[in-house]
Length: 338
Image (tube, rainbow, N blue to C red; front, side, top):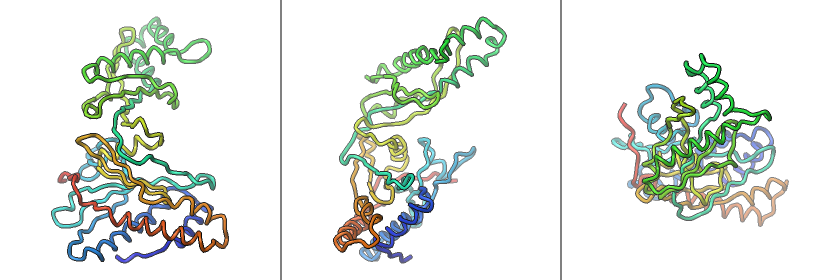
């Protein structure tokens, strides 16, 4: 497969995306072609030493009962990437070498800037997310509660006050926090409630710990006892890095824990992330940043020679960076046989 296009052609397509649709999936074929263009360069350079890769679009994947093979691997940490890089040679087609995570470049004709700090970072936080409304419903649906008006009223006292604000949150929050602390006390952890991260009825509990302990903590299911009523509440577990402010960081980390490598992009800035599983650290490197050149390009009907030179230089840096990625380097993830 021979693919070749330049920065002006690419920028012109981005301008059309910006004004016509502008959603994330518009970038998928162009990122695919960029990756294939880099693979063509590798093949020209390495000749008989070149090992190909299979680039698969999996962004529509959904968890289903009985999933096997690649689908089962990709849901290990609850997220599906947009694309995965797999082996192609005989005996290696069962390997996953990395993944691609793509974010849309524009919102309402405004550029969505993509920013990650570069360097090495420790995965040192777990964010557990529990639904307060689900806990309330589970409590009220218990048989002995349904049949006892006094118990219903008592639970409702936890759940709301005269202002319509739920005061059970504080009670449940403290109960959950105590349960988490009891489960992690041997791991030298700090447990807190993040009151700034409220979304509908979801509440966030943050556990800070040593990175070597991070995968040992299994806390998605908690047995909760409220006024003698025992229920099991299932939460969602996200991993996080204290120094990162990117709202997509939990998804990125979960994808890295599945695939070891992630190319992260909005079509203009490109980051390459690698997981060191033994140290539970992530190395972040920016490959290229076309954002400032594109911002100027889209505002000018006739771009200046200087802008074209700058954009071409950064484009060359992008292609060189993508070409330098050796997806075959260990570690790789083996796809279980179907």
